[in-house]
Length: 461
Image (cartoon, rainbow, N blue to C red; front, side):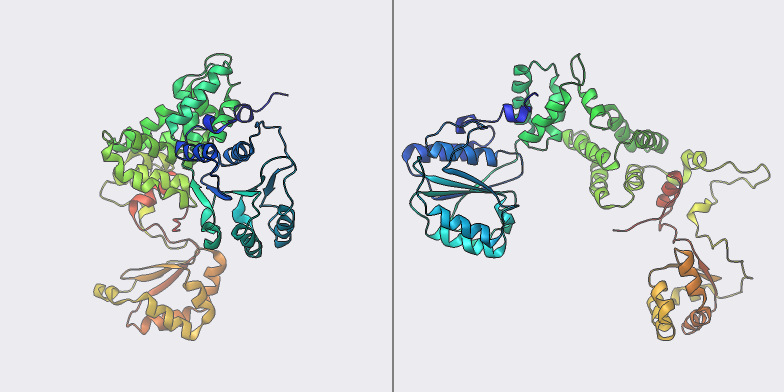
């Protein structure tokens, strides 16, 4: 079985560490001068070399050669994720008093130290305050904010930084050449980007991609393997956004969704493309702001389409017509000045239309929904609980309540007399219609987008 590349090309000495010179330079001088500390804290994002440096540091303090397979009785590694109780730390405190077997120092590496319990931290604190002369502690964590201040004040802290994309790509090139992997620079840059500053993740991706083809591996092959949109499709979407070309946007997104490309991945690719050429794409900054909110929505593809169509004239677009079933020949043709049915609130199909009353239009402005709910609450707690989650629309003829579900509609309708009384308390005389449907989107553009996507409900998170 072949050895994983990230293990094969793991650094063996501080001088081989890439991307953390602000840390390795200090540690090398401390070892050379014999001024190493009794406790270190290595903190930073995952995959940037914390554990590697901890192991290398432990071996170099003890003047021992380091290999992946090497083990030493005086270098003890503890995973705090699974050994986080106070009993575990008490056991450590007892054993740390025993002198090293053969090395100058007994060194404890505690990985993911933030996982220790509060009582375990308290037990560790005593040892860090008064450590034996022969003991050194190297703590590593991805979340230093969870460590007590009493621990932080007793260690030398080293903050690891995320490795730049160019540094990762250069390191990947070295590995690819050594492994005789035929891959172009754009593909390595893409792998480095999706490694997100982690050497381990990036090298693992290279290991995964090495068997993509017997020919030279290209960026397009990597994009396809990772399930991403192609660079051409991303640029096409941005060009369509700038031109307000909703048809191209809808067609491209539909094709990407059919291929199973996640909407969040498309958003990330669009953001990267905008950032990489911000001078020439400054007109895309409003789009970038909208894309940042797509990660928090239950309808990522709908929100993505809405964001990309924000420059388009949706109300006059041919996409709406192309996405709507054809009307019978006898139907009245829709003109540009007439609103599309999706834009206007529709009463529930299961509620018969009642005869409209002749009322004064200016009465509508006097309606207060919160007072209406209070009046209902005083008479019917059950109806109020459903109304509080419902939407509504009031015009000169009727109050339409959008319950969202059939069961909620039925429960509200049981208290129609109470609702009528609450309206009359505000001197309003309206027909009350309860719909099982959710309230239509607030703006016509969102409504049209939902229509293009085949329907749905606007979700605010």
